[in-house]
Image (tube, rainbow, N blue to C red; front, top):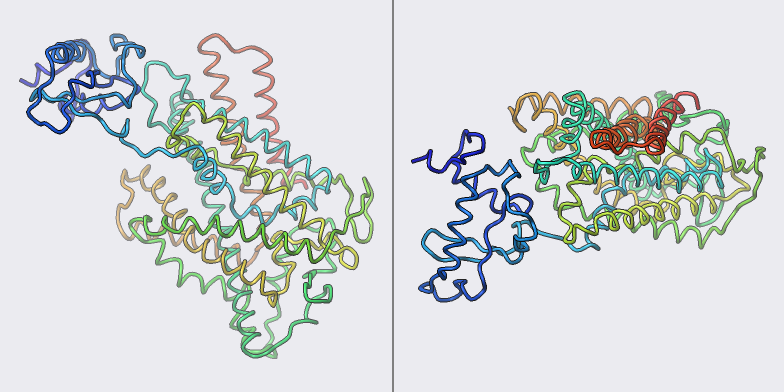
Length: 556
């Protein structure tokens, strides 16, 4: 009896009956959908009403088609123009009744506005804290131009990722991710390279999160301690006076010197220091305290609980925008334009350190490894390109707003623009109540996002090695200990989030932003005979820019 259900011209189905497969395929609007039945033939409230003879004939005809060919062979599939739209699809029951398929493909769809802000929220990460520092490294005018240029380049490459699966013929790619596309065009090396570089971006983000959480937890604890003991830190740091103080943690730092935050590792450990300073150090103790909180959370089998708190990211970013606007009104603008020479308080408009900003921006605009998944839930698929473009514009405007305002309001004189830190919140004292709230919001947001990132790393690594997302407690524990150790070591010896972000962004961006999307697109055009020299030149230039971006991090 099973042989009667097998397609006559298709491959054999192993592991499940063809009847089950046909039911699954019939609900896929991109392969073979259920036949159309006129509304008058549909069973609504009366279960005794039967489908007409016309519908029964249509059912027999579709069964004949299904026996001629399998769902993976599109040669004998009825053309799309004779198949009804998803909202008009009905399922024919062997009992002779038909029922409407509600919801099209059965998955939830979001309107464009929700999709746009989902992309905006996904890209708005820790990089926003380093944008002012990146503008300082590149120069004010050159930094603005670079943000716009990198945003446009990464948008185009993201567009190429989004369209990459559409050019594959005769295969249902509705559930494919970009690494599946890379495997199709480049084989196993393409798939593994996309996965490895995606892992680098995730682990790099987790390391940055650990450094920032150590920073926020330290400043929060210091604020509470000083408030309880009525300690004033007004003269502890070099900075401005008044209610809205701005500090320069390292006033003697030279413009060419990168990674000034490493001086934290050389903090005084003499016995003369108060007990609180021994027990509550930004680099010596606080990064280790976080292990007690975060390592158990990483070992949860499911991350669904933490996914409920993703709204905290939107709240944190909106509060940062409010904070920057408030400081701008209170501090005013402090700008002077010196195009190529450095002064005591101002930096040139064009600086050779600009690759540090391009590295940060590559990660700031990075969403290429999950854009296909995000756009699948868009209600109007024909608007995917438009919605993606609008989301990138919103992200770019947000980065420009925060970066330009922080750089412009930084009080110079008396402070030099060189004092802008890789985390611009470090330019405000721990006693600032508005900044204290920002640090608290960001700390709780990162506490919920960090286990989600760890879950994504675990799923990809364990799935590839063991074929299971949770092969065992000790396997997962070992992986999590390695990830946590990387964060602790960075927070202890090199807590410069600007440098960590730019190296991670340039490294993963080389493959997932510049190389793989361009190579996949050129191969797809070459296979259909449409690759021309202007397209080949343009995409080769994108690949060269990706390599230059990575090399620039080591020489600037």
